[in-house]
Length: 109
Image 1 (cartoon, rainbow, N blue to C red):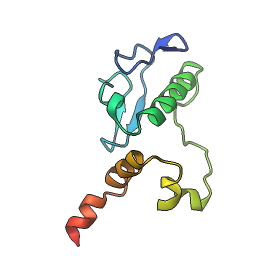
Image 2 (image 1 turned 45 degrees about the vertical axis):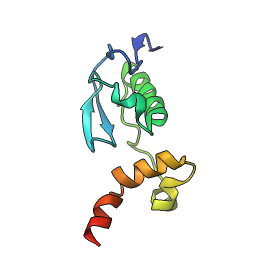
Image 3 (image 1 turned 90 degrees about the vertical axis):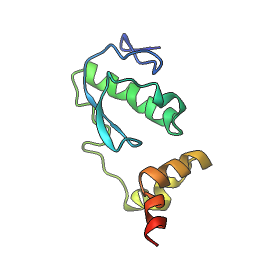
Image 4 (image 1 turned 60 degrees about the vertical axis):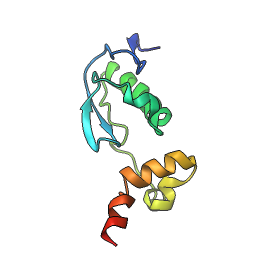
């Protein structure tokens, strides 16, 4: 699979311009050319893959690859319920574990 002429298939090494991409699972910015095979089985893989394609499109057109820079989100979209809306059960569980850290919350109770 190619975007802007560069390989973006997570089963193969990305071969385009370098940029940093935020990984929710790792809670860190990682280089775009990293081993992205864990993305294949990640519950958010489809969402992140679409975002990765957009970032490649942005960086290859000379723009900042940030997906959130200069974006305005309604307050309700950033609440726990807003972030979980429209996600599958697997995606919700992943977000609760990696974003809201419900495992740590339950250990502290």
